[in-house]
Length: 422
Image (cartoon, rainbow, N blue to C red; front, side):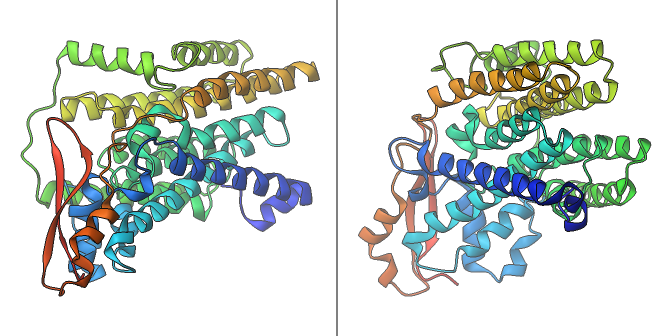
């Protein structure tokens, strides 16, 4: 990604200011989304699913290096393991806040990478700014972000994978993939079992296009993918059943995505607006003879859908978190495509108006569904449980069983936490 001083210097101080301002605004917006979207018990006061009994528990009971390469679910979860290193750095009742802050910081940095990549694909234009803002803030605005993904480590791999995908596709368009992008790509491949079959082909296209640093980025992507594949083959696995090929399951998955994948059920217009607009933009790119732009937009959308269907097939369910990647990458694709189409129009007013209209439309839908009753809204408040139990005053060998989120009718999550850490 074109973030290095000698690259940005070509655009002068104004370009520096634009890139920095855009990144900071996007990071701040994602942070506010993580903190304020969830009604009920705030997200920074709950422990979500695997964050407690898997990631934090290992960090509290073991040496840091003992946890980093320990697979979960049959594959590596390196980003979440790194984030959980903050677990021993304070009292147990404040653990939710520490995990929330580190996961939100990772999400905000990924959002900044997405926003600057999309902007640099159409630099100095209103379309580029809108694409960067929409693509970056989608990390915190889409429905799945508020319901389940944002603000915890258990789902951080979806966010890192989205950033890596945008970075690789942006590389096709001449946005240099420097160290920040390479690091995110490596973390994505070492974090998600789905990543290799999405990211490796994208890296190969960059090599075929002979982009600068494409070979190095390809090596990073392949190395991370091979490392993940090794753990999938030789590591411990949960019992697995063959992928589901039931057409009814996939029909329901598509219907759910189109009905409430982006805005939920509270927007003033249907979610079908996004894929419809995306299809129109693709047609315009072809009509305007922008084949590489059309390929980039199609690749972003297709990568998200491929990951969605793969997750549905493997897990035999159309979980809301699986909608995260196709919705975020769909917004990134729509913003990028609109910016490229607008740049081909001679009329300056149209070049500005088209992306602005898109921004108003999407932000209207996102803001209408900003506050929501999420799966973690019922809590419980983790810190209050710890303080009421007297666990902080117990000796290091004692444990306590605590309720954590989510508390579903079918399944209630619990964690036997160590009172005194390691």
